[in-house]
Image: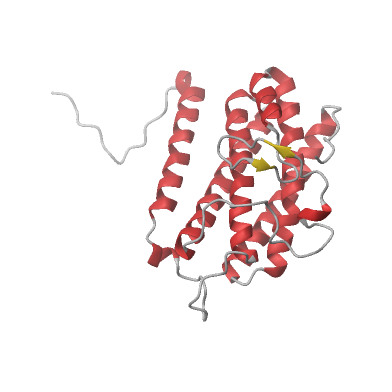
Length: 244
């Protein structure tokens, strides 16, 4: 008579299936994260939002604009990092890609949840970054906001500073080996550098405390990841890309 496996006893994965199984589990976890965030009820997600202020932030507020634009910005970082999780040859680059995916996918879900609770569009309806205060980091002060067709997961129109063009994403998909690692690091570093002004602006000017807190977390995380990417590029003898 066969023994019934003890459900409390951990099993050891088959080493031969490690890489493929890991990628499959990662994809499943990311999908689960999205489902959990989008499935949260409005009443539950609303805790901490608008404390003392029953009215949601205005359509043109820092809070709404940041949540919309940073959601688009995060989506592309996740898209590029998903490629790196499969195609990168350097374990350090794959680890970075995994960290970006798990962190930014979670933050994306949080911001999309805010917009749903506030009954605001999930994507920016017009030109991005118009919500930013009139500083040197504002959309008008960043000449790199060229007209491109955005990635499939984002709206068409002008790309925010640091974002990869459709052509650059296609090149990344077609690159293999160590050259992929270098190009991914260059594109993601520029992407982080382009998104930091938005996060700093929201951290300083948002009216919702939860928005301020998340923006500060994004600044801290992306500054640390940018330092790591600069070090990895230096080790490869590669230079960062200029801001677009």
